[in-house]
Amino acid sequence: MRRIIELSRYVVVLPSLGALLGGLILIIIGLWDMGAAAIKLVQTDVDLKESVVSVLAAVDTLLLATVLLVIGYGLYELFVDEDLQLPAWLQIHSLDDLKGKLIGVVVAVIAVVFLGELVEGKDAEATMMTGLGAGALVLALAAFSYATRSAGKSGDK
Image (cartoon, rainbow, N blue to C red; front, side, top):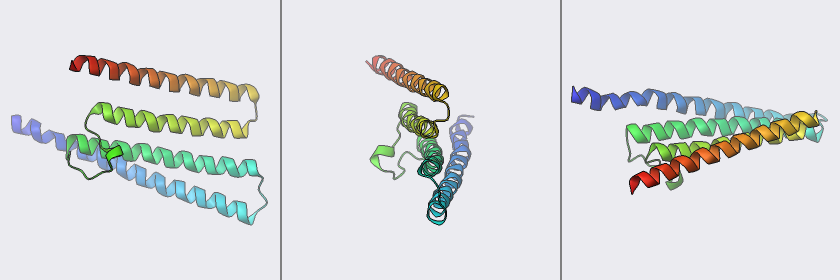
């Protein structure tokens, strides 16, 4: 029974591969969108605002791809092979490491989404509400990260 439980950790290979595949698909989509924005800018008379929004949408897709890649690498490293050869900044040794990296990427996604809203700026009140919501979410993520890091450190003593 113990051996079955020990081997069950390898089931995590499936969601890890799924996240990596999703990340690769989003990278292709993001690069396609970035190329389409560049071609549209060169071939047609597009205003700057529309170009910026197109590029920000592509960057948003690429950041979401990064989230999926970090999840895929992290799950694989945590459950399957801790000696995975990754850059030091991407090495994940605990669920707290994975959480911290994900929070960082999510904050970047929130910033890009808000920047896109700010550039489009059709309704000042809606833009302000989006900014307040984005700020509240970032503050909540920071508070969550701080609270769980503090709890983990105090529990280690």
